[in-house]
Amino acid sequence: MRRVVVAISLSAIAGLYAGQFASAADMPVYKAPAAVVTDSGYYLWLDGMYDRVRLPAYSLGWHLTTAAPATTDAGVAQTFDQGLNGGGVRGAIGYIMPGTSTRFEFGGSYVAAKGSGSQFTTNTTGGVTTQLLDGSSTLGAFLCTGGGGNSCTISGALSTNYSAWQFNGKVANDWKFGSLTATPSLTAFGGNTRVGQTLNQTFNEIVGGVVNNSGTYSASTTERWTDLGARVGLDVSAPVTPALTVGIGGWVGGASRSTSLSGNDTHTDTAGTTPNASTLSVSDSKTVFLANAETGFAYRFAPKVTLRGFVGLNYDGSVPGIAGPSFTGSINPPTSRTAAHISYSAQTSYYAGGGLLVKW
Image (cartoon, rainbow, N blue to C red; front, side, top):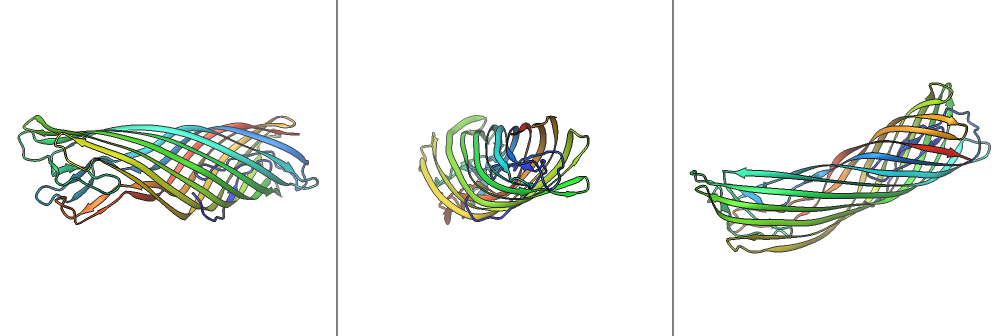
C-alpha cells in the first residue's frame, strides 16, 4: 500500500505508545500519569498479540449463467468470506528528552494469519460455465435444468496466508490535566502486506441422476501492497491505584498505497472445452484512510518494569481484494469480456494481547 498520508494516534502509556502495520493497530504502552517533566532516559517495550484479520470476499472459479438460450452472466458460483486467525509481535525503543516529557520512538511490528474454507453448491437453474482470470471464457455452458434429476454441483476449497510488517517513527508528549494525562503523538510509517491464496474446485453436471460431464478449476493468486504514510493520535490515561493505570486512545491517518495482483488459473472438463489456462498481472495505487482505537491497562510491579494488557481494532477503508472476471451478452459468444482486477473494500480487524515496558 503506498501513498502520501497523514494520521493521528491516541493511546496513553505513561507517555509510551507504539505503532503497528498499516493494516494492524498502533498499539500503546501505558504508564502512570506523570507531570509535564518526567524521568529522562531510554525505554523498551515488546508486545505479543492475537489478531483476527478481515479481508475482502474471494470470488473466482466456475460461473453461473441464466437459462438457455440467453446464458448471460449470473455471477460467480461460490464466494468465500475471509476472517483469518493469527498472531504477531510489536515493539519499540524510545528515548525521553531530559527535563521534558517529550519522547521519540522507533518501532516495528509483524503479523501472520491464515485461514481456509470450503463450500458445496448445487444449482438447478440456468447453467455453469468457466471464465478465467484474464477474462477468456469457453463457448457454451453446462445445463443444470430440465427436471428428472438434472443439476450441477460444485465443491470448492480456499486457503489463505497473510503476513504484514511495518516500521515506524514517532514523537509524543505528555500533558497533565488533573489526574488525567493526555498524550498527543505524530507517527510516520511504512510497511508491506502479502496475501497468497489457492482455490480448488470440482464440478459435476448431472443428467437424469447420472454424472454426464465433470471438470476442475484451480487458481493461485498473490496480492501485495505497500504503504507509506503518517498518523496523528491521542491517548488518555488515569491512575486507579499507585501501581495500576487504565487508558484509552486511538489514531487516524492516511497512506499512499501501491498494490499488485498476480495469478494463474487452469480449467479442465470431460467435454474438452477450451481455453484451459491463463495468467494475470496488474497493479494499482491510491490514497487510503486508516484508523485505530484501543483500550488497556498498565501495572507497574517494579520501579522500571510495567506489565500491560490491551484490546483494540483497526479500520482500513481500502483493503485490496480481487474483483472476478465477467462477461456481457450471451456466452455464445459474449459481447465483451472483463478480466479480473484489483478491488477495494472497508474492513475492520481486531486484536488483543499483552507485553512489558522496561526503562533504564
